[in-house]
Length: 284
Image 1 (spheres, helix red, strand yellow):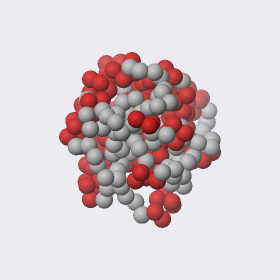
Image 2 (cartoon, helix red, strand yellow; image 1 turned 120 degrees about the horizontal axis):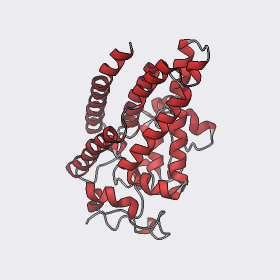
Image 3 (cartoon, helix red, strand yellow; image 1 turned 90 degrees about the vertical axis):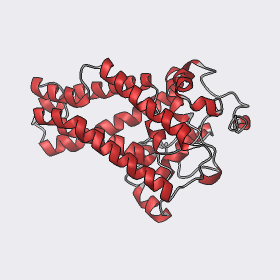
Image 4 (cartoon, one colour; image 1 turned 180 degrees about the vertical axis):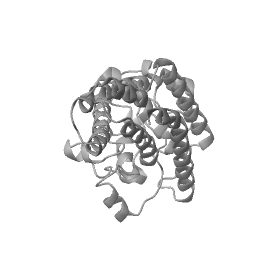
């Protein structure tokens, strides 16, 4: 079982990733939520290049990733669920839920700590909100995020299958929740009681920092409601709200080299005048 999971993981994750990416991209063309202002070619080439770089960095930084560590923990008897007589189904469900909570908590911390926000703000500096925004993370943040997941896996001792399911779900729901797609209002209201919808997460990408510091979830929506970080709608509405942050508003800032340098540029948070000047650089 462990050997089969190890062999199947890369193929399964890649297949789901490409399938969901293609499906959401087609949906964005067929039923976009917001009008696109910036050519896809500019944003997509750089955002997808970042994915390739992030993947290479992860493989170099860690001898094994989360599923591999879960298999090792099971073999060595490490972690809570490997020490307690917990039914397999309960360990599976609890592991997926706890890992999702850990990612929510990590996300909140990356907003609250200035040095971590410098890394994470690159994700928010995208000037559009679409499926590729869900892939746009600084390599250093990707490494730190994997370190958090590995620590949780080592402490929890979750079933390897649960970790694999969580990783696949996280990737798929991140693509879905960042997509520029239009859902019927009634369906959106029902879905967001369980999962994070694009309209729910788009609020998190508002230029208004009060709205940015809300709706942290990628997958399960319960954490934002439970910890009172939930915001139903942006103050200006989805069509009028501005996406991004005030400091990096030029199209040149969307290039890969500028994205990688953003943690080292400017103050940790927007100066007071930045939101008022937010549209000044869009034409450059």
